[in-house]
Each structure stands twice: as C-alpha cells, then as structure tokens.
Length: 275
Image 1 (cartoon, rainbow, N blue to C red):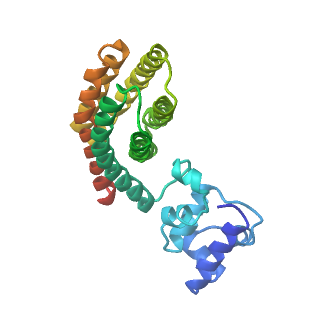
Image 2: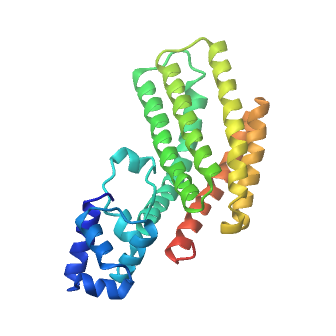
Image 3: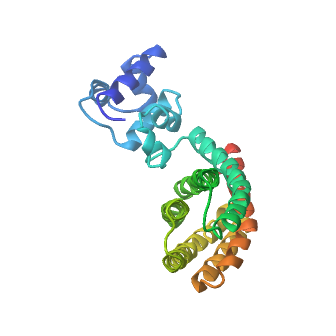
C-alpha cells in the first residue's frame, strides 16, 4: 500500500481505537513528528517501522497489508503479488489440491481420447468438440494444480519450484494448443511426431529442475517431498529418452497423487501455524 492511503488507513485505525497520536507514541516509542508525517502521507515508513506501529495498534500486520491491497485479477491468478496473507495461501492451496484431483480424473479421460481419436483419420464434429473440450478442461485443471506449487515456492522461498511450475504450465499450454490444432486441422504425421518428441525433451528438462525443487522441500514437508522429487526425476529422465515417454506417462499417475498430498499437507501446516 502506498501513500497517502497508507497514512489514512493507520490514522483511521488509531481513531477507531480512540487513541491520540501521543497515545500511539507511548505504545510504540516512535517520535510523534514521525507518526504525524506518516499519517499525513508525507513520508513512507520503513517496513520495520510500519510493523511496530501496526503491532502497537493491536492489528495483524500480514492481514492488514496484504488482503486489502487491490490486485488485478491476472496478477492474483498468476500469484504475482509480493506477499500473500495466510487466508490467501490457504485458499490457493486448497483450490490447488482439489484441482489436482480433477486433473487426475480428467487425465484418464484425456488418455482415452488420445488413444481413440488420434488414430482416426476422419473425425465427426462432435468427436472433435469432445476432444478439444476434454483437452482444454485438463489444461485448466493442471494450471490451477500447478498454481499451488507456485504459491508453495513463495511460502517456502523455493524459487526453483516457483520457476519450474511456471515453465511447466507454459509448456503444457503450448502442447495442448498443438494437440487441439492437430485434431481440428491435421498436420503431417511426421511433423506431429517431431513436435511430440520435442515436447518430451522440454518436459524432461523442466522436470529435472522440478524434481530438485521438490527434494529441497524435505526440511519443510518431509519424506513425501523427496518421494515426489524422485518420481519427477525418473519421469523427466524417461521423457528425455523420448522412447520412454509412454512409461513416463504411466508414472505420472502415482506422481500426481503424491503431489496432491504435498499440497494438502502444506495447507494443513499453514492452517496450524507451523510455517
């Protein structure tokens, strides 16, 4: 929050609590002139000074200055805010693990659609619509699922997790778009195979980074994070071989379940104030 809105908010809270500026000075030991200049919007306090004032007003610093700050919908969706309140983090993680379960279920439908439709030379319009809707639904569920790991990257200061999760979502968007394009306007088989091979290499490379990021969560989340890291590493290496991609897709089944558990466990820790 920027001045002069910050100062006005502090002044409003002080007045609601029937405190004078002198009363606030006695509670936080900050010069009255400094309090006056902050409330009038003339100066922006250092974070440490602001925290002292907020605590002197018996308010929660995190809740007060992260929940009320206006944020555009796309910044909120992409978890681009500098700080997240406990309530926001819990909502993000709960949404993510539920999205993970939906992604898991839709993934089975997606696999069946790939098996049935991609071998067909001619598809009816209804089959094309079903395929595109299925693929798009999987993409949306996956994006919200990975959004949880972007949030965890912020909570645990695990920037590898945050960056690799973003890259996974971006890569998945491109892959799904190409799959849908191929069904609507079929490409040459050799070209499509080349694209799929390239996608396997990209997912393999990003997967190695994601695996390392999961293993780095061991201190915070325990053995389950290591298990997720090992699965992701095996999957990534199989994708890099290209010929092992089918096995990698099968291993995604237990990997997604483990990752859903990670998000659930992290949300429980945060709810219990263990973070």
